[in-house]
Image (tube, rainbow, N blue to C red; front, side):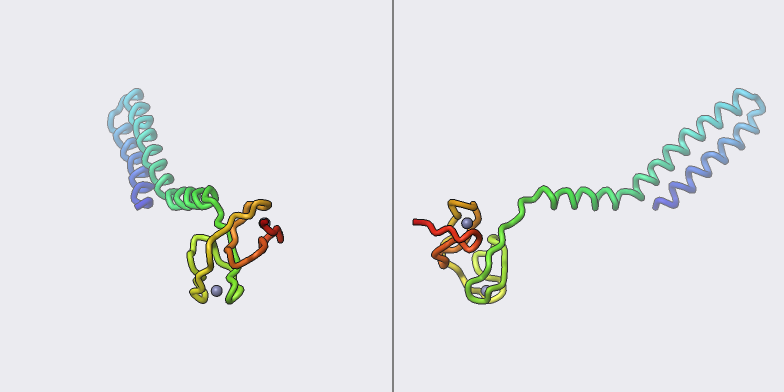
Length: 125
Ligand SMILES: [Zn+2]
Ligand SMILES: [Zn+2]
C-alpha cells in the first residue's frame, strides 16, 4: 500500500516534467513542476504516515498501558503464588480468600486471612 503511494508520487513528478516540457513555455514548465512536486509531496507524506501508522499505534498502546493503574499484588495464602487483586480467587489454585482489607498504614490491600498487613506488618486493632 505505501509502496503504491511512493510510486504515484514519483510518477506525478515525471508526468509534471513531461507536461512542462510539452507546454513549451517557461511559465507552463515551472507551474507544472511546482504542481507535480506539491502533489508528489502529498503522496509521499501519505505513504510515510501509513508506514508509521503501526509505530504510532504501538506508541499509543504503550502510553495507554502506562496510564493504567497498576494492580496491587497479593500473595495467595494457600499456594503462596502472587496474583493481582482483580481476581476474587487465586488463579493458580482457586483458593478464595476472605474479605479484602485496606491497610491503614501503607494503603495496600490484603485479605482478612492475614491478621497483620503482609506488606508492612501493620496490625489493625
Ligand atoms: Zn493460590
Ligand atoms: Zn501495610
